[in-house]
Amino acid sequence: MDEALPVVVIGAGPQGLAAAAHLADRKVPFVVLEAEESPAAAVSEWGHVRLFSDWSELVDAAGARLLGTIGWTAPPTGHPTGAQWVSDYLAPLAGVLGDGVRYGARVVGVSRLGRDRLVDAGRGDQPFTVHVRPTRGEEYRVLARAVIDASGTWASPNPVGADGLPAVGERDAAERLSYRIPDFLTDPGFEGSHTVVVGSGHSAAAAVSALARRARRDPSTTVTWALRRASAGNVFGRGDADELTARGALGTRAKEAVDAGLVSLVTGFRTNRVTAHGEGVALIAEDGRRLAADQVVVLTGFRPDLSFLSELRLQLDPVLQAPLRVAAEVDPNVHSCGSVAATGAADLAHPEPGFYIVGAKSYGRAPTFLALTGYEQVRSVVAELAGDHEAARRVELIRPDTGVCGGAGQFDATDGPIGGACCAPAAHLISLATTTSVRS
Image (cartoon, rainbow, N blue to C red):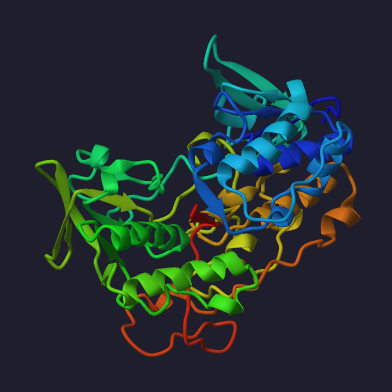
């Protein structure tokens, strides 16, 4: 393989920029290909949301070193919004990386030069071909010695349909559904209306808490929280037992809103059909129950887009669509213990040598990803690509514990403590979803 060829990084989000910083740190040629016209475009879309990770957990070490060359200093402690994360760290980092980051460069395919998926002969000796469809101009391809896919999952939200596919009528009613956390502080459409929030993770808890504050000020604002699970006991977390205090407080606030009657909780609601009615929309469950609302916020998680990787030989878990060794750690059907081991190059490798999926996409459909996890991943992967195998094997991260344990295998349990396969039963459990909470 020609060592002069660059490592291609797909995506200029937090993990993609961190990967580029580590490559620059080791003087490995790189190109970052970003589909949008600015860095961290997905983060910018939820810029109104406050993270429950502290600044110390949001800045990658190599990124900080690179920024230090221009006199940048790390922000003080605190929990920034997505917009602050971009303006105070991610955008400056992209600026220092300069021409190494190409914008308006959407990757539409990755393969091997002269080899489709079926060909064995000389496969590992051939460079990757990364096919790019730019915003302007003709499609082109980049030859690469390795590829790091840090494209994330933001562009592929899960549907409201309970079977993993869009519910009947969901596509037709898509304009009346929101698949992201709205900016409740600036959007007047939620005042004095009925909103249904679907989902059981942190994003849903954050949305419910924000809407509950509005309902407290204005009783004509009503909120329904629809859970697919038969029991609500495992969505409120462990509060002070969570080592990320802001994350622990999120579930506590949501429970307080339910207990105060500001939020109506509906369990076992698995959407089968979506219908429009007047200016509103209605969700119909498999058991015939109906929830009518002025707007519906669907926060049921995300899934990886694997379409542009169809010519590569990947080894993915059939359930989570994550690398096998990663899936064994994060599969919510088995456990969702707070302590999940850090993952590195060996865990992220595929039968296609030199190709790695990192960041939220490496967790497939599992909802437990933290920025710290991605930073450790890219540190290890870049060390491996640079030939520093000892550094690639070394673990430099201990993930914050949620103080929770339990598996989604008890999806239909309606009462009693739900234990996990990896630790003692817990009285209050949580289904991890995202790493964010709504700005207050």
